[in-house]
Image (cartoon, rainbow, N blue to C red; front, side, top):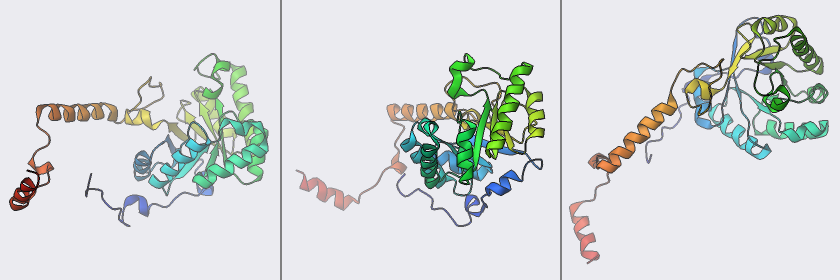
Length: 277
């Protein structure tokens, strides 16, 4: 609104917050739980940073969109770690992965977050000192191979495969993994056996951190809420209510009122009326 945008003060919470380094993030293993969430715009990023979220995960539909999203998130959260995924062309070769990793790092990413990238590609990134986060358990990018969304690791063979995947990513040099929809007992045992950070998405309370989508927490998800989600606000409901009230006020004439309007002095208005006769 004209004249209403508040300028940020040097004393704002987000300005005073110290950004975690990757080394400090890794050192949190076994000391305290880590909170991650998704963010795709500047406003939500600012909210996440002021709330004290440890790490934001952000991405777009392609490279250019990812860079746009990351830049917006970085503006909103200058002092929060950002992880962002490589687009699928990176999977073709280590050279492509390095090139794209460099571009999203330049946009503001701290940690390369990859779903479906095989360990040898991670190894190439790790050798160039890119902090990498892998993904095990249920991988939405490989949904068709799983027969649709489902838990992974409910048989001993699948659980062992999850463990093997984790160990392979550790050997490749990853600093962390997202573990999605793996039985809690399995996730807990694997977390004990890896030096990497393990971020649980629906994999129980005993991992090093928890990762849920902000749209679930804020109540803006327009689809199905997963079992592991937690909702602390209902922003979609609030938005519909607010916009509905606005429309009603416009139709009824309740908006705008005198306080919303700009005045003109009577003599100036009289001269204006004379000029348009």
